[in-house]
Amino acid sequence: MTASTSHRSLGLAASAPAPGPIPFSRLVRVEWEKATDTRAARWLLGLAGLSTIGMAMVPVLAPRTFDQSHASYVRVAALGLTILLPVVAILMLTGEWSQRSILTTFTQEPRRLRVVTAKLAVSVVLSLGGALFGGVVAAGAIGLAASSGRALDADLSGGVVAGYVLFVLLNVLAGVALGALLQSSAAAIAASFALPATVAALATASTLVENWIDMSTWNWVLEGEWSGHEPQIAFSIAFWVGVPLAAGVVRTIRRDVS
View 1 (tube, rainbow, N blue to C red):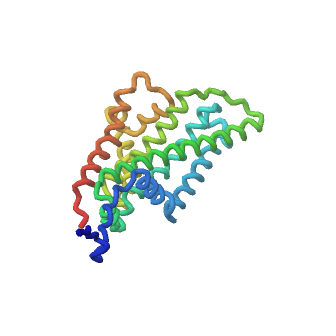
View 2 (view 1 turned 60 degrees about the vertical axis):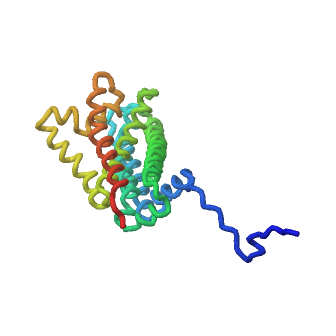
View 3 (view 1 turned 180 degrees about the horizontal axis):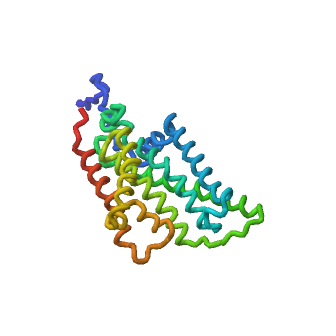
């Protein structure tokens, strides 16, 4: 008579199944927490909200300085929103490099491109959330102006709203690109303020810089004036977002973190 011998009868534990890959949704959730659930991020988000509210109140308090139209209020809110919101995205991209915890991240998820993609996804969500907040603030400012008896042009359209959202997204992605390229919080934040200011100064002496490189070309996006400016806008986006982001992704994949 024969009997089969099992691992249990020999006192051997069955080998545990190999763990599956980390779901992408979990990576996005973790990166979202990094972007919003730290003391620095909460302070920056709060200050970004205050700067948006403060900028949106300027047309209310100084009606002769700004066009009294719905679109004008939305654009002013966008300018206030994009002062500090890109810094939040920069910290999400660079925080682990600066704090030397990136090895832990890449040990948990060795496929670095998935981590970068999750950070990009969170940046897009952050941009859309910020744009929604800015829209609510602009609506509140419009309501205050209207309640004072002021006449405002109701000139909002789908193109104006799309330009507003894209403007916010481009500014955040420009910060993401610098963070991915420099991989240092201090350097990326400093560059996010210094580089546009330097290019703007050069633009005063060069129409080539002004029309093709300066971030002021994105004002055409914000104002919905695409016609005739598509090549300049595309080149500026490639200069500030496409090229540095691609270089930053390559550097992230190849950089030694040991």
